[in-house]
Amino acid sequence: SLAFGSVIHIALEAWYRLTGEEQRLLKVLQLIDDAYLNRDGDPEERDMWHRARAMFEGYAARYPEEKFSIVEVERQFEGKIVNPATGASSQTFTMAGKADGIIQLDGEMLLLEHKTVGNLDGSYLERLWCDTQIHLYCLYLRECGYPVQGILYNCLAKPRLKRREGETEAEFQERRLALA
Image (cartoon, rainbow, N blue to C red; front, side, top):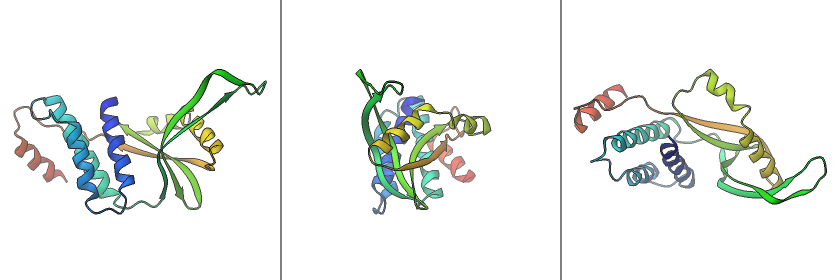
């Protein structure tokens, strides 16, 4: 799951960095292809490759243009960890992270957070509001000069369509296209 999510994050990073560029989708799909070089000999890798491509092709079709503008992509940050009672900084640890994106939407600056999910339902969405990591990211990004006022979760549901046992690549693609 983590490896699959990493591939999708890499694809999304490229998607937002290449905004406005010709052949953007083809370049991102090539990144996905490059992540699964053993797909012809490894059925599990082939399955992940199909899912990643399908997920991203669907994403690109649904969001060819965004309603927000990109401020930063994959913004790294680091800051002190301060004891709120004493005001003393930790001598051992620092807080560091990498925000998927910082965007501007309707006059507000927001943290853009990508999530790949197997099942996008009410219980998953209910858990997002208490994600401590994301709230800390907002706090530290504000300290870095980004007046982040909220979070836009970019949730991508993993496709459920799988290649059937014994199904050729051409048969699978024909079945996939028939569902589109």
